[in-house]
Image 1 (cartoon, rainbow, N blue to C red):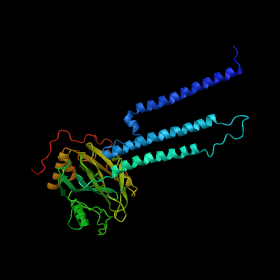
Image 2 (cartoon, rainbow, N blue to C red):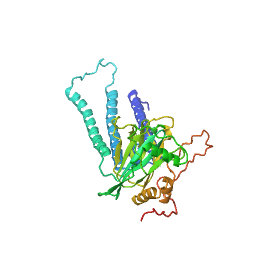
Image 3 (spheres, protein in one colour):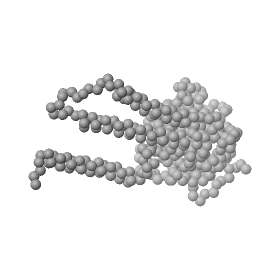
Length: 379
Ligand SMILES: [Cu+2]
């Protein structure tokens, strides 16, 4: 049987349509396969690449991000459809007028096109402000106040004050802030005690102008051979008080989904150096990094946050303050891995002989196996 011209072209049209359906099906199948093969669950996929948050603030930001991306997809889909309709149904036809019907000054259309984007902005703005207020919220009674000092190119952590009991209520604060003497002398003394002279935080200048820097009787100092581990209690409000001894750094813990610039002279730079997290919801080890380009070894300016139970944290502080144990020794005494499990110190020698360790341990389970806790020296 012979096909007429019209029948032949409609048959061709049907073939093209089925090919398009096949292609769309293939793309959808590939997308699904990618999702399944990467082991992503729906929750994982909806985070669109963000880390799992470990604070209520991080969770709120994660949800805002998820909904903002979904909203962008909806708007994007509407725009793509509008483009598709325009290029499909309103294309120039053979023998048609040179201009299609013009619809400028169509009031209802203009109003819709102005109102819709403003609505989208207003909704995004509203939820952004709600989440921002939650993230920036501070109370007067955090469980632990930590002093963070960033310097080229490492970190120093000190415990400014700790409330007892840690869990809620009106406890009393114990302060570990070093009040007497020139803090730079204290620092120099400590570094000499350590066995070898290290440069002072303020680039070796023992000047007195950096009076915003804080020093504590319990400090953890990162060096070229040791990643500083900041030990914190789980389920406790923590305040971070940031200060830079030299240039601008940035305090970033990816699992907090939050970073804040660490400024020298915060007052003169009109910056608020304090922020709080309501609580860290789980124990474990979490890497922290400098997120502001601060010089040659910026990329190696890593630290670790080690979250332990409140009882272990109390023991850790007692061991460090009463028995003057080092950070590593105190960690070991509370049955925690004494060195970082999330990152390694930067090897400054050119040849490492491939000795950089790859597997440091389980970041979710940092307890030492078969370990009994050491006495804290207090009853
Ligand atoms: Cu830095």
